[in-house]
Length: 372
Image 1 (tube, helix red, strand yellow):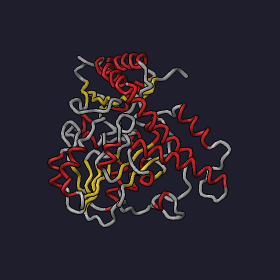
Image 2 (tube, rainbow, N blue to C red):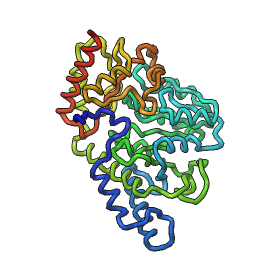
Image 3 (cartoon, rainbow, N blue to C red):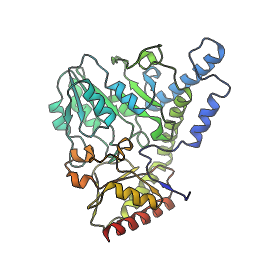
Image 4 (cartoon, rainbow, N blue to C red):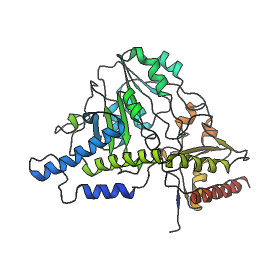
């Protein structure tokens, strides 16, 4: 197979070699189940708790606040079962389906509007959040990359924090942002390892002290009884190492260099009147470049790019192949026709200059082909 250029890291980044080694080495010669009473099970348990401590250190929380789950969707679903006494539930209009569907399954939902830049309208949100509410607002949008004004929202809700519980889906933001300040402000925070080059099927839910949570399954008492069942210890270690590598990327300047490559890719599109950059004026994740191509369809853009060896997406991976327009773009005020021409290119810190140049050339050929 010809070499492919992978620009779909927002859907999931390939397992990093350092993560794979840590997963292998941490459990070599040990049984997978940490719940036994014998010495080998205790050794496995020690690996699990080491991973928990390392995740907690990266997020600036107490280790007991770290709950390992089976992925980001489960973490979000579990978070939306928090505070059983809540009588109202509000989420932003651009939340991932893992939040939106879980919220709607629990009770009627109030949707908090966003601006045309894809960011939460904080003033309207604070007016519309009812007393005794569970609120869920993502840290950054998984499609457009637009960071959300959570610090502003928290400040606006400060006087009401006794009757408002805040969940943040930080899954898309984790590869780029230091989440410790966020974890200090929110009551619940969801993460997924595969967005960071960790193991798929591994998630984390940060549960703040005093937050009540209804389990979604029953059995043993693992993970404080919030998420029972045998833990994936190797997956937990993958989350710890992936978060540490993301912190190294921020400290070393690798994140900033990725943003520069993203901007170079964007600059190659300047002058193309049919191409619009989504959320261009918002503070966006350095990894994301989301485009609307006038008169095109996402499926044909992806097909033609795939022929050119470029792997991209239209939006959320779980919605790929779905014919309907993105709810995120519609919430931003775009027409359904415009939203059907969406294209998302997402980088990692491992994406090279050469790959970005080749991708830009391939995208140019695709756009020329569609225009002819």
